[in-house]
Length: 423
Image (cartoon, rainbow, N blue to C red; front, side, top):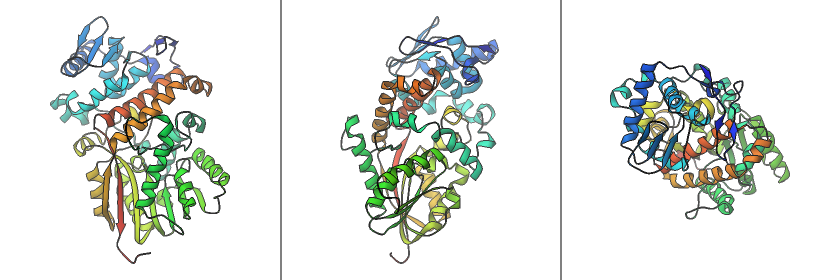
């Protein structure tokens, strides 16, 4: 392995990659000439028919025209992809070996053709070459605490730099497009109110929230007169959410608990969970839905917000270890709508009453977060996050936005109810 030289990064600055903090980014993996040649051929074959321009320095340009993907170090780029697949693709961006003037545009093209990038014979052999998720990242009760902490306990101050004042870290619902920053907080409240309306949360409702975030949904539910129990595994989120609840004078109505959903007790009139299922892991989806069922009183309602992906892609990639797993959401797994509905049907007494999709709203939400993060790069640096982290986070936000713009990802509001005596 060879240590990476300082990389050219956005803004014209050079940033050496810290090998202690980012060992797999600082070092280009060793690759045999044959592996590199095969990878180079496969990459050119994949890019040749896409509506983008891939400029490989010293080699040439391939593609049908469109957003530019500028590969400054093709040897390192191919070595990383040949060794670690899409994990290497992301690490190559973190290292500054490739860039794109319109990063979202280039990634949207790739996301829209994800099923075609790898030749069919290699797709069928994915189990032999694709890295698999580490067993230590399984979402057992202990594993979930570690996985959640690695993302959500990075720094409350970091998240506050690119989220709006509601500190809501999930898709908003806008009145129209294009969205702008000044309307984001209202759009987040619109999303929260829609979920609370679906669950019929009002005066006296006993509400269980699985996944606290930084407390905005609990605040709005308590303001309606609900009695809220909210569960989180993030100490950072719990502490700040409690402070916000106390400052609003609603601490008599809201309890924020450091508690796994599997450890929840009691009976509730309504359960709300926003973008929590993605952190559960496929093997625990039945456990998660049984927990919803067991905590919900007869006649109660469950409102979920869930990111989804196509069922065939979910099945093809469900055991793969991805760049997102390694650097952003360890142990995560995005379900399909079919997986959600089949799991609820097969393992609970919950009945699907409604499902609404609004993926375009997530693309706009992510765009606003990404632009805000970019604008506040100096503030991110002042918090102690280096250039490699800032490229990581930029890639994560752009990668996610591209998934929604391409239709590879979607987001839904689900309403489930439970037969029985009405409350």
